[in-house]
Amino acid sequence: MKTSFGKISGLTAALVLLMVILCSCSRITSGLIKVHSHTFYPYFDTVGTLSSYALDKEEEFNQNAAEVNTVLEHWHRLLDIYNEYEGMSNLCTVNRLAGQAVKVDPDLIAFVKYAKDMCDLTKGEMDISLGAVLKLWHDASKAEKPYVPAEDALAEAAKHTGFDLVEIDESAGTLRLTDPLASLDAGALGKGYAAERAAELLSKKGVTGYGLNLGGNIRFLGSKADDSPFTVGIRDPLNPENLAVTLNLSDCSCVTSGDYERFFTVDGRRYCHIIDKDTLMPASYFTSVSVICKDSGMADALTTALFCMSFEDGFALISSLEGVEAVWIWIDSSIRYTMGLDSVISLV
Amino acid sequence: MDGKNRRATLVRDLILIAVLLCLGIGLLVVSRSHNRTGAYAVVMVQNQEIARYSLAVDGVYDINDGTNTIEIKDGRVRMTEAVCLNHLCIRQGWIRFENQSIVCLPNRLSVIVRGTDDSYDYVL
Image 1 (cartoon, one colour):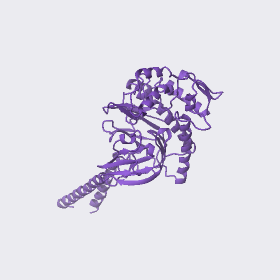
Image 2 (spheres, chains in turn yellow, orange; image 1 turned 120 degrees about the vertical axis):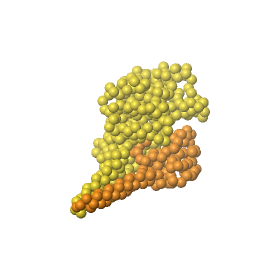
Image 3 (cartoon, helix red, strand yellow; image 1 turned 45 degrees about the vertical axis):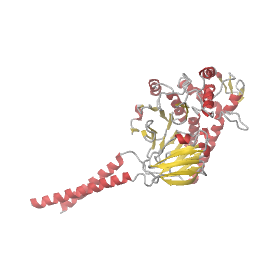
Image 4 (tube, one colour; image 1 turned 90 degrees about the vertical axis):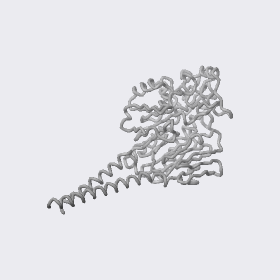
């Protein structure tokens, strides 16, 4: 009897262990539910959400959300190219007064300098001075009956682009576009840069376990309160209801550019919102590109650049950077990613 | 113990193992399939919840005083109509994962999936 009882307990223990292993083997799912959430409208013409998995008190979260709101509003206004705001000069002002030096907030100068660094890093594939070309595409997509901009109009506009047209005078605190027909458009970098500034603010306060999603531009602070990572799913282009890839991430940024987010259709053909500076047409190498690295601004810039580069060129660029990883998904659902993601990525 | 007793004990142990195994697998299967019956679509305007619909019941609903219309079918939800310029919300198609959302920016409206086990913190 004694022997049998001992065996039973041993077996039961083994079975329970087996069940536990079976249950937890699938994917890392945290039991920890998002505790607080706040949505921001409509900074950067998109939706932003701040979520807390930190198990902090509501008052604390609301305070953080309010501070993030202030940061996002600040950058939304500085980088807005469609509206000007009383008492300040922003990119819209600089564009309107192209040819003249405009005194701006030092933050804006810092941004333009960073944009120049990113332009150099991506060999011009991410370029905020592409405004004149992008404007033609914006107008075309927003028309009552959307159309494709004429080739010669695009070619003419392209003559008024290039970072050499941007004059930064730090001592005077001014920005000047040397060409009156040039304009700046921060769309490819603004969200990431703003998200990073917000993350910086929260980080300084010691906040951890938060996620900030600004229209597909996600910034994680630390891990969740139970030490589990944040889970991100990227959609399968052939079956958008399903996922192609999932990632387990902590304390980093994940930015995705896709052709299925913002697009317009002309004669049955889809035109996405990311314009390739070489063809002056929407890029069509991939259906989505995701970049994972610490800094949200860099991730945003790289994602735009990679979307407009061949896989070989993009892979070479990412490989040359430390702490930066990427995922490319083609329209036929094929996927490539950099090795650094091996431990955090799952193909669905 | 003599031979006969030993075998009886062994058989009893095997039966016990089999029962426990079946129970374990059974629980696993049940917990997995309990995926979508508790799921719902939450409609938020600005940061306020204004409505909640079960994903287990097919239906078409006008929401937010008719600015938008959603359809629920087979445990998924999508935006079918919207009073907005670019209809990006409609182009999002069907969603079904926990936390996944469709946003109609001009109307400050979001439809978010909640209560399903199929969960990712973010879906891009």
